[in-house]
Length: 243
Image (cartoon, rainbow, N blue to C red):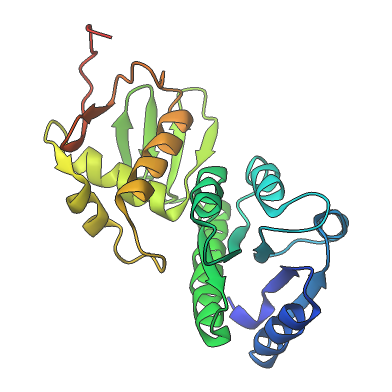
């Protein structure tokens, strides 16, 4: 699996940013394509597959957050959002929409390259695991779902599959492995500390919300991932009767 075979799409309305990122990734042997708008990017995505998208949040026309949400509903392509330093709310919303990483402008192109390489590696590994899942899967029971730790997906009884991002997988596995015990947000942040963006209390809450939706949990009365107010979260198979 050659990393230089990977294809990257850069979506930004700044020609300077597009050219800078194109140059850095092209020098590493990647095939790089760019677009100025989300609409132009959508046409490229119809025509070819990409391993990584570097996506500006603030685009003319359709914004990057909307495109992220639409992409994540049908694809596990790697998505790195490019945001302004003051766009804290947008970064949180971006993670909720399913983005894998974010970088802030002005950014160091070498850092973006390093993050991109790591994310491409994870995306391609996930694809290979999905294609060659012939080994006996390692399964953990999660309610009516099973967590396939080899492919990092949730599998329902009807064999339907729900993909997990890297952060979602690490967090869900940490909760499952500590079933019945409360884990503080600090402890959970430690479990996903190998991510290239810094986890925060809010990040943990965002990931918990995403996991609950994928498990079809009622957000007003979750049955498996329980909020312990003022402390953190715990995983339990025991139904809660006081909702």
